[in-house]
Amino acid sequence: MGDGYFDAVLFDLDGTLVDTAPDMVAVLQAMQLANDLEPVEYEYGRSQVSNGAIGLLSIGFPGIEISY
Image 1: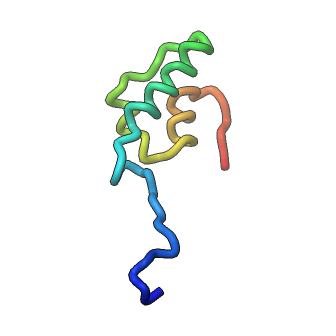
Image 2 (image 1 turned 30 degrees about the vertical axis):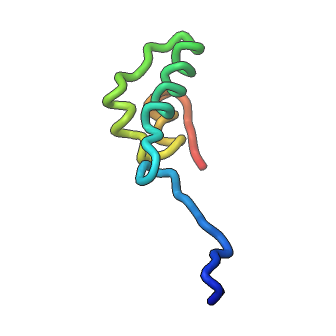
């Protein structure tokens, strides 16, 4: 590895490099509408994005049990 080249570059797209919250919330809201549910408010959904997909699904579909 001493030749100045990298063997790998890894990215964790958790909002540090790319703000994915708008897309994540939009998908949640679309899923809710497709299931005849009132979509969550954007700001509330955005505040839950750091909880991952399970966290978003939990607030978007509170009547179902979701686990890893």
